[in-house]
Length: 145
Length: 424
Image (cartoon, rainbow over all chains, first blue to last red; front, side, top):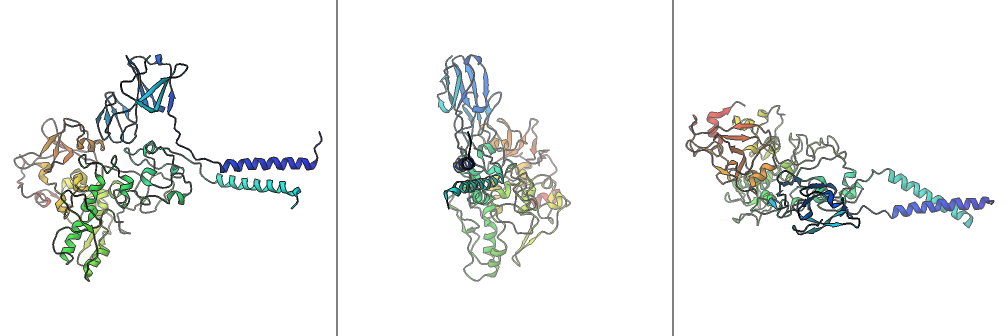
């Protein structure tokens, strides 16, 4: 197929114009980063976690535990101002202001005025554990295995 | 214009626009976003301030970010726009904005009972109000009829449970050149005043006057690429300290003297070369401990930061005596066993890891019951003091059983100096 000089020019200018327009629209349509942080984290199959185990889920700022009733997850976010507490042999310690919590999450000393949250756990369709850090549950609640 | 040129011309204009935009964008630094967990709102301050020191272990950058304390336009990448709503310019702890920056019931405007009312208390301190000097000078030079505290460098009311209050100082009603000169020349000696230019000591204002350590030039030596090196008016680094070394106290207490005859400030012109020369009031006498320890090793939080009551002068709030730590001829220092995990002494010790303290520990307390948490009774019954800044452990000599002929009613330092003064 022969292409006239006029048509070639029109096509090439049209294409470059469209590209430019696209770039401009992309620039003008820029959205700043939103605070849509991840709230659900998919872990392994539940049987991976043996009774008595404690597993650090760093991206979720949580620890996952299993006792004889099932699985549960405790938030590592200090309820005072939101620092990440450290799990120690006998307690959790907030490095920011020194709040301490028992391994159950109960507050030992302030400035935190309440204990650590427990996160909701569910199973995915293919049977993996999911921790939902935007949903808290009662301390007795367990994901039964 | 014919349609023949319309399309090419439009394309060229758009292409040029794109080139300009691309050039403009490439000249900007790559945006660095931070979403602090406390606010959960992205902010772009680190785009320019990348490398700046975290302010303190109690305020991690990933938790607090910058805007929670400093204010500012969190999404702006233009310097002027980003800084247009900063609180207190560089210093969010300036008293004019401190409540908004550092206050809040979970932060530094907490309960009196827990001693978390730092902001309210510091407003009553003589270092913030300057009430002692004002009261004495106003009384001495006819500005007020008695020594009752009336005026300060800030208004303070509704804090003191005993009803004490002071008004913002106002010029004398009648012509009084002494008081007028006092106001114009001698009012730079309180926490929220900027230091006089050209003196050998620099510091910030508000809480940062003590808690943001400065070098004598007021220059910044940290890693924020945006701060000009050699520029004055900065803390040494972008960090807060809870253990305040004597050098920071010297920023006010060793920079010179006021001359009441001329109502002028005579700045110290020499550059002290060692600690003894650097010490507060070079002509005075001091005991060994006054040279070796830091001010905060003996002076308590209430003395320095106020106790929530209006005091008429420094002497009224400064109540530590020699016997507080060294006991008397017949009694050892008062002590208290820490029994509660929420004991304020534990909290203060937590902020200064140089002093190991736990429930069951025995610490020295003042006559008012305030904890001297860095002075403790040890297993063999003796007493030890740990330098809050140096970490050095000192055995505390007691008066009882020593050659000291201390009289319980003679507790001012001058009486100790009679026997224990060392050469300057």
